[in-house]
Image (cartoon, rainbow, N blue to C red; front, side):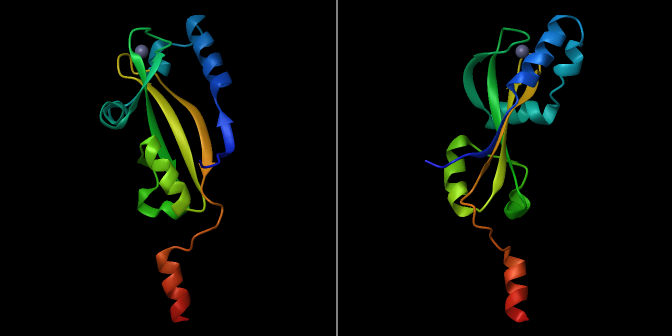
Amino acid sequence: MWSQRSFVDYSLQRRATLSALFQGGALTTDVCDADPYLLRAAKFHGEPTEATCPVCRKEKLTHVTYVFGDELGPYSGRIKATKELEPMAREHGEFRVYVVEVCQGCAWNYLTVSYVLGDGVPRTSGRRARRAAEE
Ligand SMILES: [Zn+2]
């Protein structure tokens, strides 16, 4: 299996956000603000979980996984399935993964974890490699 680096767990912030919500310190509209794009992404590209939405307690949460990195070029910011990450980690030196949980019922959304994947060997972009060869 691949190794995850620079792992960040946002569960403490998530819990604080939820307790603020339940204590009246935040409005549902502040936290249940998934935009139509994210809701559509959850519907078509999301991965179902067994966790129930902490806000509406009706729907199961869906995970949407984004990848970001300079090496990814136009693929930076795309949604990936979890099973696509391991081959990607072998092909790239470094990119960051963000996992967002989304409720398709009430539009609750929260970044749950992020981490870095890749084999640690920086890749030269195709354009830069060509330019170096011409010089
Ligand atoms: Zn919900």
